[in-house]
Length: 228
Image (tube, rainbow, N blue to C red; front, top):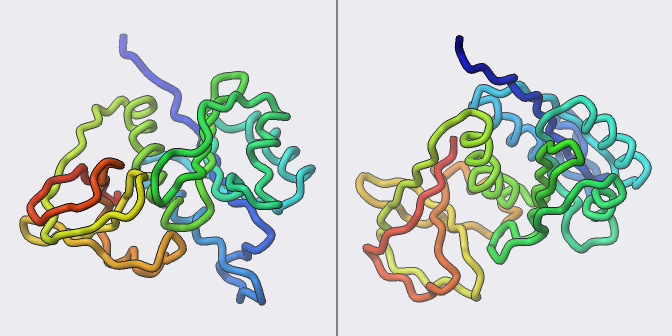
């Protein structure tokens, strides 16, 4: 006799009227749907089967779309719609659909608006912030370890790396800084914020700088969250 487990069906959903398919040229106020493909790529590297969807900023469309996804998929991951804007409808609709909110917002930068919940039947629901750097950071720091431990049966072992420079962290939040791996150290990749997707190609992952650390010195070590 061997112990077996059903392989989960994972749904990845992008939200937002401003998003257009990657094969279309964006118009004024529009951008291409990059997050859904980035998240799906990470999941496929874990060996999971993924289906992708898109929902516009319409409460009825989101409500109906989520109901169908909840019925047919085991893990649900959304991108966008969880901040404080007029069209950030996800938390309210999750409440209407009786999805239990486990938490909303983390004292971190980037990725503060991250939302997490559970359906009435126990299916995990992750709603990632819409900015691309925030999406990928939260995906690697929280969603991937959850899936590795609870779905794939892996043991999570974080590694540490040594910073090659002095660095001043602004603010009182935990900060995730993108870094590039060198021979024996890492160096911070300069970006213009959580919307700066292009500069992530220079990074190999993030370091996690605790909230109570501000004046960081060369040679200090930090938890490393690598790209898959």
